[in-house]
Length: 440
Ligand code: S3P
Image 1 (cartoon, rainbow, N blue to C red):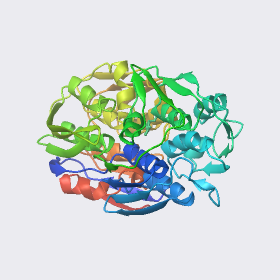
Image 2 (cartoon, rainbow, N blue to C red; image 1 turned 60 degrees about the horizontal axis):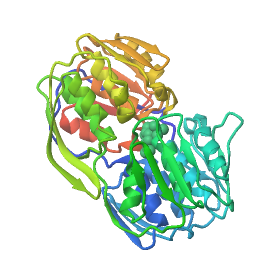
Image 3 (tube, helix red, strand yellow; image 1 turned 135 degrees about the vertical axis):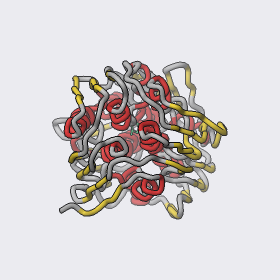
Image 4 (spheres, protein in one colour; image 1 turned 30 degrees about the vertical axis):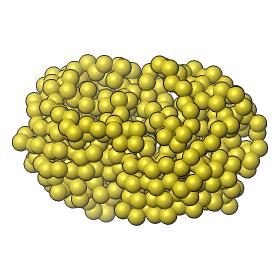
């Protein structure tokens, strides 16, 4: 799964046009497999993301004895086994590049009767897991990683879990979700209090499966001992994948795109809020609610962006969108300042450092700070950048070529398939002059 061999070469200039449906939402796809597997009855999913990350989750549940048909054109049928119906897998669960799989499964597997070991690729195996193993430990779970708190993780089954009230030190939907999933198996009430709102797909989907979740401001609580009932899930297009086209259309003159059926959950729309503050021309059309999640078509036309101080309360609402927003900042007039985003340092790569290095390689004045970046907008040259195997960084620099003065060559791009298979063809169809080839 290492992507060291795939290179994107993107010719400078052009614009983006047309109606585009991007890949399915990654967060919702993971959760649909998890909850569908634990439910009583058959769950039908449409719009499922057939990317490596969500497929890692799907394969993990197959390995634990769940019958899953598909994916076939985004359609998946999950034959739920109930909360206590999973079986011990034969080997180590390989979760590839997927932090969401590993963190959410840590909680869910803490409630099982059997032991499991989980591992991943080089990136995942260097990411922090104490953020879940420590609070899960206070619930009575045993989740053990390396000395440094990284995977492989061993989850010991057969523990009696008890509910806790946990104040999260960082704004993390993965930690919140992990504890709530463990809470399904715990005695009494599990409550998670977040320092700032984070994506609430777990809470919404649990409710969709008929499980009571009590949400009051920044606190989400549930009680163990209930059951999940199978349902139908229509996964909207992923706003995080739509972001590359939103930024591309905003920065490239004469662009006009309509992004179809995109999830606009209020905990995910930081990118819209931030681009609008920068002067972006973004219109939401045909707003509707699909299966408990708000959805819209998003029209974006080019505009002259201006640099801003990004409001810190928007950071968790746009946490996956900063690689692309940094490209927008590089094309804006004036300085853009990001603070309060230290979480970016522990994503698939250190996204502050890797993005700053790439921007500098394109001649952009970008200064990384401990918790963000200062970017001076101006001209961008062509050049060679390295994505570090980070899907979102690869796609962000691809869009940068729309405004660069020379070809942009991006190394280590195979992991684009973790979240957005078909990106190259879709982007090319919209007007990006992108080619991909195995590296020299
Ligand atoms: C996710 C939560 C976010 C996000 C990740 C997906 C989720 O991580 O970066 O891509 O599906 O819960 P954190 O919760 O660690 O911020």
